[in-house]
Image 1: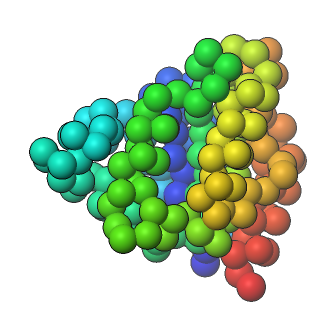
Image 2: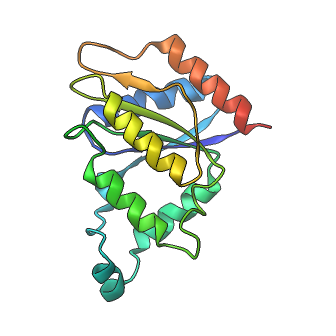
Length: 169
């Protein structure tokens, strides 16, 4: 049974989306785990912080967790037309947690999603660009919801069914 890590940038609407999506993924034969990035409380990444304190245990554990999962579902709201700082900061710490900055990402499948005040198009494209750069295989279909547009259950199941098929090969 494939294992999907659902990372959510916030503990509000995107966490609710994560919980909803977890159920759909499990319906089509996947195990899921939800990880709230805010709960990691990673310090701001700077080279000086890394030199002074080293890589936080939480970043190393997350790197290991991503290496052991079959796919990543990354959910984040759009902040000022881009990625929330907690996502960028987490990825920055993960990229210095090992010898190869792409190791935890390269060749792994990902699906992106957002619950945003608007369409969330900009955050999806920004996250897609970053994860593609890190070597992830990002599916074209996304989870995009807002207060006026709820997640279509059939669409969510179809995305997860595709992801189960891809990760079972």
